[in-house]
Length: 285
Image 1 (cartoon, one colour):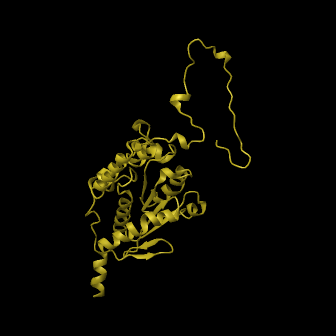
Image 2 (cartoon, helix red, strand yellow; image 1 turned 90 degrees about the horizontal axis):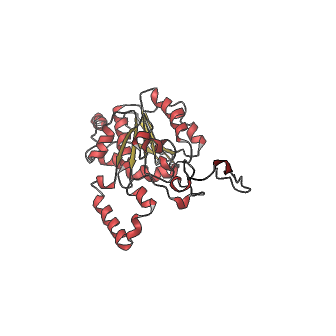
Image 3 (tube, rainbow, N blue to C red; image 1 turned 60 degrees about the vertical axis):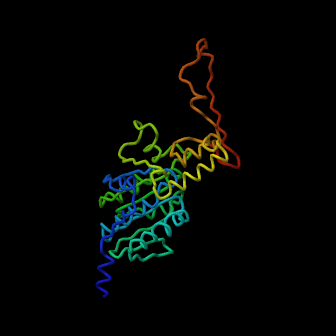
């Protein structure tokens, strides 16, 4: 009976029984470096969970990481509603460590959830490892330089064993950094080397009706709800910047020009850059 139980626990599971086409397209993509640019409600985090379980199942004894801004955020997004739920739904006999936010598969593979944004200590713990799959979630909200983490730490760790790195996020006000460079609206300007997948809440058959109902109610109460940038970012998956959150509301269309207006003498122009170094607070440059 013990041997039967062991074999059943080790039997391959089909974690795609409830997946929709956009999820499968991303998961089936064999690219080593992938990006998921999604709106809220697109099942991005659940897709990450499926990816981790499939990686553990296919590669006995491997290590996988899920990384986001903070450890509490990682717990709230993934621990109970994704990682534990998948194990329960598919009968995977995982050993879960609540303290480490770590799970151990019957075949010896492990995953761990943690936060690394602005935490150099946690970033340094990733050095020297060998990771079959590393997922960075909500990366458009990171304050630290994602390129340094990815290219100096994670890619060398993944390259040793042919592991994969995924970046996943919704749009934010921060139109800079590796994730933005890989997903910006102008496809011709995107950073090369990343396979980009984009889908939205209306592609998710499990929540699209409820989401549409909620949005309809919001619009009925206030038709202007569709105008703010946060609506366009989170519901329409668009890269737009909320100028009201900027310290200096610079707009290239309004504040920049390449040639002087006709009739103006260039020699009369004097250029000046003022930098407020701050006294109690850091400067904004």
